[in-house]
Length: 172
Image (cartoon, rainbow, N blue to C red; front, side, top):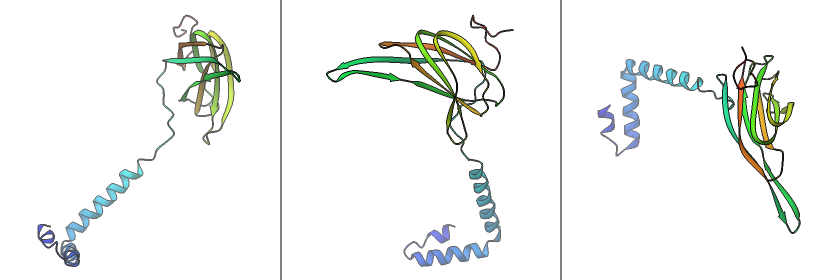
């Protein structure tokens, strides 16, 4: 290979010499072919999927929620930001969740189809509740919004594939 790279002044000469070198080196052709096939095989295995995390249950998230009422000369404006969390689930299996919040929150649960379309699966409102849903899709999205004006806080949100006791421990 060093011999081929010595003549860089004439690009045509370099290409001809490289072609001649490859023609006279059958083992190099095999090595290049094997390297090419290996690179294609590695790249083929790099297909991406949606950014929906696979969860090892039980898991607890700390979620910030807030709602601010702003008064302006044109009237009140409500700035409500909803936090969301998507997780991958097993369709047809119950998914249990618990919310403990310092402020009144609305939790909406959506099934997320492979096309990205969402459909409401359930909704709860309060400061503390434990319930379950039975999704029919592989992804579920939870949306958290403060229900009252001028309220904010950090809630605890627990997910499990087993029933959750009201005290916070998994039911036996």
